[in-house]
Length: 168
Image (cartoon, rainbow, N blue to C red):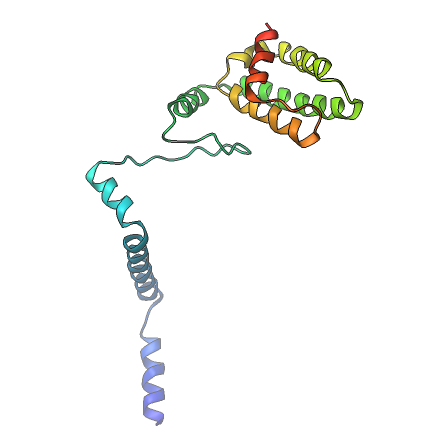
């Protein structure tokens, strides 16, 4: 029995680290190939035949509807998003912080809907460059969600669009 145990020890000593890593890499490649073929064979076939194009999503925090490959408006926003400068981003960030504070304040003060809308319109008027920004729809969604969060006044995206028009 000693000879079997000694043979296995010698065999393990003869394997180098590079041989080990190559074997692990081959096994991982076979595993992922199997998983890909089993669960994603239709998508892979469509990609290889040219029926579907490979698309990567942009990472946009707190924006669940920013990417929808079937929606042309979303693709236009993504293209415009790439052209946005750092100054525009900082202005949008400032507007977002300001809107959160305004909506929280309006909720605490229990403003009536008309006063609340005028208040929001005045804030939006202070940021004219954001009006034509590709990030505007995301800001509209933020306003709607913050209003729902605080329960101040419930607004939908059409009403927020009207506030932008009033802010001219």
